[in-house]
Length: 261
Image 1 (cartoon, helix red, strand yellow):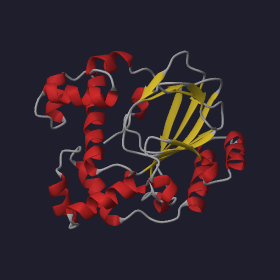
Image 2 (image 1 turned 180 degrees about the vertical axis):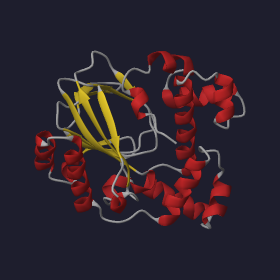
Image 3 (image 1 turned 60 degrees about the vertical axis):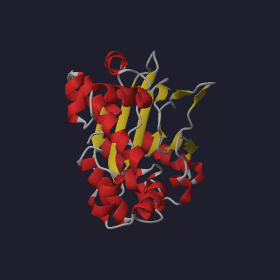
Image 4 (image 1 turned 90 degrees about the vertical axis):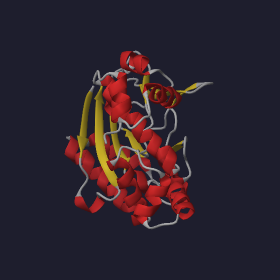
């Protein structure tokens, strides 16, 4: 698989964390994508992936808005893979209006927000990645309804800088917003509570360190856990695998989408 990330333009950097392109051949197996605290707009200009849930397997829509997820997603690339995607900043989940901020653990067809057929045609017909990124930027500029709230963006920045190891009381003090009010705004704009978002950051960092071959004792210490057992329990809860299983079975796509903080 060819995977490439791109930085947003300055005018969209408050909304977009990364753009990414994925191309290649179908995969024979299922891939596990971990939750990382970011919503995404995904456009399959190639063949859509299959997604497996507890009770069924289904093809994803060609264009989807993936809200915040709190459990791994099982995907299988099929046919010719061609994906162009927008990874939103965590605080930008709700910039398209109420529909985006309230789809935690849901995959919504983007037809509810955009006319996607012309977008997919332009992405498929593009001659190179930069042309596809220009298409994605045009899509965003026409779809965004409001800017992220600065106090939520600042809270996100604080949590990401410390790898999620910050209490809500400390976060409230840093932002100057009362705890309950901050929790409500955070939940509304991000789609997760501050505590849940912080937990995702810690587990994602742990997942990256495990893949790098770091000892579990050192992973726990680096991620701010009280001990290795606490880290392993948190890991199993969110990843639905032990750290050793994740290291052995991460696959091809999983390591690409472990959020970078």
